[in-house]
Image (cartoon, rainbow, N blue to C red; front, top):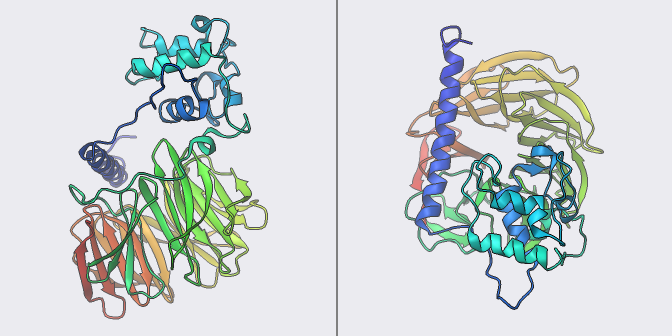
Length: 462
């Protein structure tokens, strides 16, 4: 489609691509500044190679993205030890302990032909890693885990993450934030940590043992537990549920080789719904993290998940251009709303759960009925919809054109435009009559919803 036909569509897409590039660059910049690299664990000459400690981490970081369920290049998967040993479409034996040279996996990682060498479109593996693979195969390609069918991500997901840096070389994008139950503190995403701030920007607490990047911070209704969705893009994702008073880790849930992008407690705080870049919606027990069901009805990233008032339905928003109503009892899709032309970033129920508000990448908020899935109205956000929140009788819309609008739910009229944003909004939270916006530059803004006054503004940089 030529740009002249729909210049607004292309402008929105270009803006979205620029934002993704900026976010990616910022994270890479920080990693480089902290000296973080991925390397194979050393193996002493006299020691056997451990699949769990030496092979699985390399497979996870170098191979899993292209050789897993739903994305198995050449029909070959490495997402478990059992899968690793099964041939792909070539029917060639991946691992032959009798002849390492004839092992297709080893041949591929050592090939000098870039069209064949794995990892594809990447630098060749280090000689130390290749030597470790050779030693593992010639040593019998043994498995030292408990279950050879166990997903790789569960086998190698760290129980303890690296410590956060003492100070950041620069502020990072705020990818998630939330008010605490009292409304007197704000929790923001950090690098392998969550930072707690007083509303005037004084750092109160730094909680580590978090994945590299945090996508969502959600409290249960009672404020006792907090769920943190974190991980590393293209490597792993999970949800960690903490006791907020003590920061004791209660459980880890929804482990995946893909990022978890959103989480939401039900009203009772007993169930937790997750949305992931693996195109799944999951429901887990919020006490022990055990999966209750997994829905695979979406075909692309699921950006957002939210409960209705009764706690019997969920609404999702996906990059596959749809929003779906999901039965919370069994994960069955009740209804799919296909009215969006492009990726849907976020979806929220109205207070009476009769309507859904869903926002997309081209700056449209669709209002559609729950009973029939029919579009009732469409609102213009002015830019790619980054976040939607509903507070009593108001809809708050944060968009990529550096705007935050307060819209009435009855007449759908703009009540107020909040001023002061100087950068892309990247996350939003509402509680206790106040709204907080985190931005790409790391700046946090907090407004009073009653009169629109800017109460606080600070740079969330430890």
